[in-house]
Length: 215
Image (cartoon, rainbow, N blue to C red):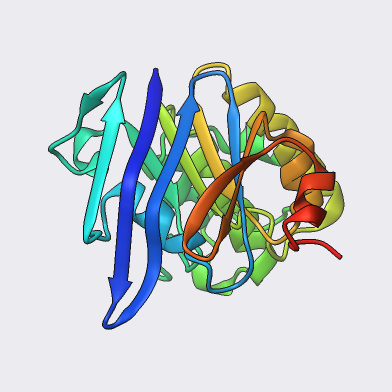
């Protein structure tokens, strides 16, 4: 499957956030999106998922324009920056909702010791982010969108998540952004930088320096 975003424009009042954005992603690849705070990364991912409407924009799957919002097609899963799981839900209910085996999770992340009946609200910020990221990655969707999946997570577990991402890309399009740019560079097959409302495809860390993203 191929996914394209084309001519994406977004304004908030009189401020232009995105202008003529283009992005291409496909099954079997990880597409990373980098950019400074406030450049529109989260807005772009939300436009892609369909819960934010742009001024203009075209989303295409396999070359065909999508009239329906992506989230309405059942093809995509989205990890937002903010909390995904409701506070009243238990850990076990979260696994059941996503139809995911809790034993597989605890085998990989053995220090996650929250009881099955533990409320989501009682998890630490890092535990919650780890759980949500894992559940989205195991959602068996054709398109997986991750907004800062590595935030607040211990480095050893970030490495495990990166391995899972590289496995899941074989059957899914994966698009992600994070402030941990080294991790994005490490796993991305395609890389875009958002700057001044525009997108630019990059190939190396050197180009990130040339564009002023890194000093």
